[in-house]
Image: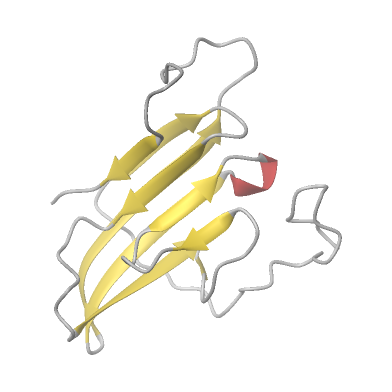
Length: 133
């Protein structure tokens, strides 16, 4: 059984928010490098205040139906990821109207190697990954 959670989480061995996977390939995958312990917020890049639009988030093709340790679905429909070994992977956002996919954005999250110079200086806000089409 593969362990997906950080060592401080003893209650999960399988990814708890797993649902059927989806295979929608976005036109471009943005790669983000993040130091362990930092956080990044991904936004779909579309005004989702319209009630007829639905946002879905996927990690490595598996639907994230709720927040879990290290992955937080925000009320703004953004996704906040806290960088750890288990959080590496591909994150995809789908914007739908009914069953039609209007937009698909994707990011590949990788941890920075130790000793690499950080892009974030102390006192600066967390990194933001925002896709625009």
